[in-house]
Image (tube, rainbow, N blue to C red; front, side):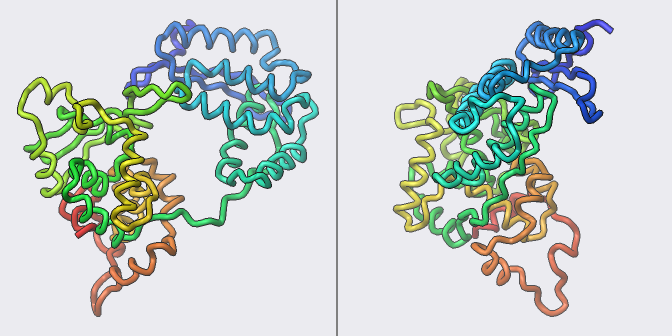
Amino acid sequence: MADVDVIARDPENGLFGFRVELGRDRSGARMQARRSGFVTEQAALVEYRRLSRQRDAQQPRPRLSDTVQTLCEDWLDAREQELQPNTVCNYHCLLNLIYRYVGRVRASRLSARMTEHAYQQLGAVGYSRTTLRTLHLVLAKAFGEQTGRTLGAHKPRETDALRPVWTLAEARSFLDHVAGDRLYPLWRLLLTTGLRRGELRGLKWCDLEPDLATLTIRRQRVVEDPTSLVRDKPPKSHNGTRTLLLDPTTLAALTTIRPRAKAALVSGYMFTGRHGQPLRPDNLSNRFNQLATAAGVRPLGPHQVRHLLASNLLDLGYGIPEVAERLGHDPATLMRRWTTPWPTWSAECRVRRSPGPGTPHPRQGRRKRATSPAIVSGAWR
C-alpha cells in the first residue's frame, strides 16, 4: 500500500489525518498513533513518514533519559500541526503547571507516586480538580505516546462542588430586563437554543431561513490566545454543525432586525456592534454579566445557559439524542453530566413535573423532539 493511501480526508471539515500502527508495548498492548487536523495532504504525509521511520528503526520513542519537560515539549511540537492554536496554548499552560515539580525528572524515573504528589501540591495552592483532571489527561497522553509506557498515576477525583446554574425564574427575570436592549434578539436566541458563545458570534444572515423557521450553525467565531486574534473556524465538533427550529417569537425578533440588502444577507454577520463591526466573543460575555447584574440575577456567564437548557429539557421528558442534537453536544457526555438532577433546580422541577391523578410521567410516554419550537419557547414562558 502506498503511503498516500493511508491519508484520509474528513468529509465534515476537509482536513486530513491518518492512523499508523506502532507495534506493541512491553505488556503486549497494541499501540497506535492517530493524527488529524492537517490542512494539506502533504503535511499529513510528512508526519506519517516520520512516525513510520521511528517504528521501522525499532526506536518509536525518544530516549527515556530525556526529562519530563523535554518529552512533553517534543510531543506537543510534533502535534502542533493538527491542533488548534487555542488547544496548543492550553496544553502549554497545563503542562507548565507540573514542570515545577517533575519537569527535571528523567522520564525513566517518573513514578505514579511522584505525579500524584505533584497533583496534591497543585491542589493545595488553589488549582481546581477540574484543572488537575485535564492536566492528568494531557500528561498521561504525552507520556504514553512518547515512551510507550503507562503513567500509572490515579486521575484526581472529580470536585464535589455543584456547578452554579440559573433557575427558570432567573432566566425569565433576565429576559424581561433585556426586552429593550439593542441585542435583545441575541439574548432571546441564546436562552431558547443554548448556543455557544462563539456560535452566536459566528452567525450570518445567510444561515437563517425565515420561511422554514430554521437556523443553521456552520461556524464559530473565537479568540485565539495568546495573540487575542479573532477568527472564524468550524464548530467545536461534527455535532456542532446542525439546523435548529426556532419558535415564532424568536423568529419574529430576528426578522425585525434582518437587513433588506442582498449583500448584507450573504456576507453580513447577524449581530454587530454599534458601528457595524462583529462583536468579540469576550465582549459578549462581559455584556451578558453586566445585564445579569442589572437584572438582579447571578452573573454566571452565557455558557451556563446551556446547562440550564439541557437540564430542563431532560426533565420535561426529551430524549438524550434530541437534546444533544439541539445543543450540538456529544450524547455520551450529555448523559454523564445531566441525567442526575442538580439541587439548584430540582425543587422547581419537582413542582412542574408532579403528575396529577391518572397522568403518566413525561418519560413514560412517547419521546418528544427537542427541536420543537413551541415546546422550547414554552420552557421560558
